[in-house]
Image (cartoon, rainbow, N blue to C red; front, side, top):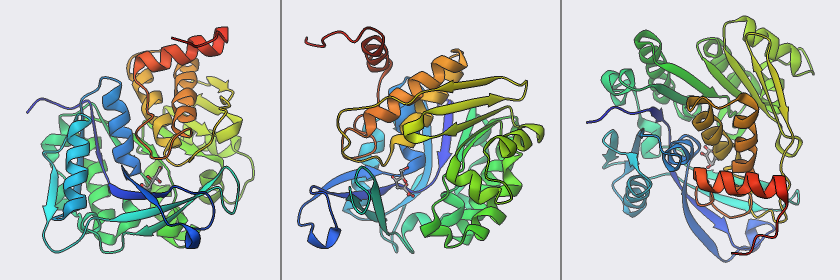
Length: 326
Ligand code: KDG
């Protein structure tokens, strides 16, 4: 098996995205997608030319089969995906533009799903140890006690093998239930990361003593993290380095917002693809903002994730505002 550039661990689900905006109690038509934060990032990186692999479990059911086919079709290695007999593939629903126009809400049906049974035995030391980077999010440890142990083991394996650790805090309070639980589990592992990706809301949960983003970012960099990236949605994004570097990029506004879910993952993939290609930090943030903006224009998390060609086309369009008729 060839070595991976990026490996990740988490849950992939079937996303049922309402075709109509508004409360789900009135929704009659749903569109089916495959999605899940960490897998979205692996797919995004695969579209940008990297070899990626994913560790998870799916149920021995039609939805599990759909996930396997999608991952494989998008170029993600599935040799470390287990198919479980006694638990189903997780699903979730997306409600769009309600109660906040332009925003989406998720409703999970993933309790006791196949992926929630992952444990240390899913974490293959050679697989992670042989890769360039391990990508984690704060979602996986929130799934169950055994997922938390798998997450910790993956992190330790990467650390002891000299593999870069990248973490997106991605705090889902619907899973953690309280901010305290999220904080207790995540704060101790942040210092083990090389690149930390976060947002204003997560920083407020992790560092409730301050309302600024600057102070926590400074603290994190002082703990040894090399790069901290703060995603600010419509306000753009910021990148800070241990050496004192600071880059701020404006968000890209798009004429259509279908569903904002998955934008952050596309952002992460384009950011990491750019950083690992050695691009300037400001260019990496620009591409990441473009990738995030593209994903909000469609339903589903992975369909509009860009290739390099798409990133370049959009960059050119934003610079020159030419009529794009081909
Ligand atoms: O980042 C998008 C994800 O939040 C979405 O696809 C669902 O993975 C998911 C989760 O756990 O919330």
